[in-house]
Length: 280
Length: 229
Image 1 (cartoon, each protein chain N blue to C red):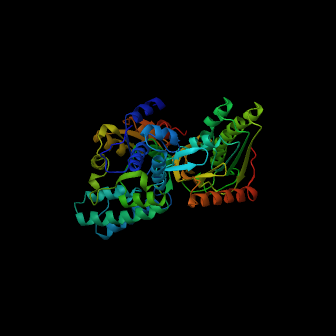
Image 2: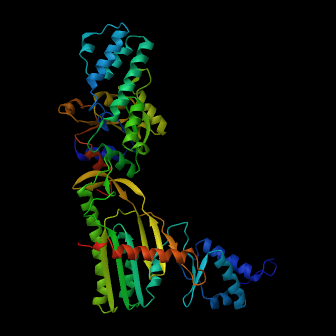
Image 3: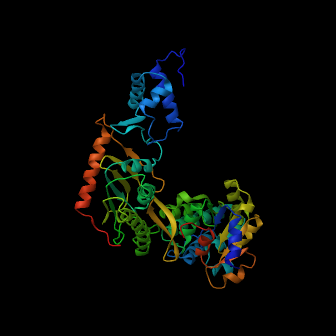
């Protein structure tokens, strides 16, 4: 693509404008890798310095992030739900993969990681070790949510239902991770699950100790089946939650880096103190 | 009457009109209806109204109010209606939720249906109950007893039509759930289907005109085909 010689803007401004439009219109999606500088040099027929200047502009606008050795990526946009999958998939390019999840049931966790594990199974991704830690609410204990909506009281039947949902996703996750070690595709693969007695209010992912994603669980009312009978309950709803990304890039010592650091400290503190082994 | 009949009725409607006392709660569970009826009678006697024997024995305050309308004394009607409203608001505080009444409201909302209340009780008392039970956001509109016009209460179709109009709906896409014959008459007079809620023995037989009769509100939740059930 040739630049317009009559355009009053500099070549780097024109290139930045073109890439900006492509990001905003979704041609490049959040988390996606941009073409290499070499490819951009060819595409726009300009010097590498011009491409670098254009990318710097987009970086200043927080539209992209550069990671040393792996390239330039479209920054995950905080204005809409972020696909976690591309981030998890990229994390699996590392030798040692760690995923920490804190939340309600682990259902979203399993859904987000499933496809990436499949890619390890077919040899497309080849980490040496995988360590998954899951920190969830203990549904054997009464807590503020989930509860009966009518009188906001605890109900063992509601918790039993929540436990069934949790058990399902935890088992599926544990099995899928273990299978990779059993097949000899990775040297070590572990899934550890711990529970605590705080009500589920948010979900947090920490990926390779470098990136964090946070989403609120609003409390919603819905009618579900509890012991075969309809019951209106107040529940934590994570399905539509926007995940806020905290993805520090190499060049900024921003809030994102601080957030990830504090998120890790919080997770480890919970893990090492009030969390207990999950008995399924 | 089978679950299939109920499913057929529910399938073609987008709007659920609920009678209040019965399908949603038992408003006079603690604050008894007969005490309220007695209080209204005393007001009438104070106004020098002679009460016929059937009104002297009446336990339903709404029947006393309906009788008041026959006196052709608007000021007395207003007085009794206002006293009734005050009693209802007090009663709403201690009303007992109908089993699965909440589940019906929440499940209807969950499945994209609209819910309105059409009651012969005052709108203020319905609002008081919904607010206490954190149900206000699910229900719109609340059509209560026409102010100082007891003759327009159900079985008159007026309140049902008011709800249908407020929702911008067609009568054919609505169904009214009620526990008395007057609900079924009002619904049909408005061109709206009617589900009889037989919450007491013997009611089922009286609901011959209803499109379908249920014994438990839970049947409605099932008919809504909620994913999470």
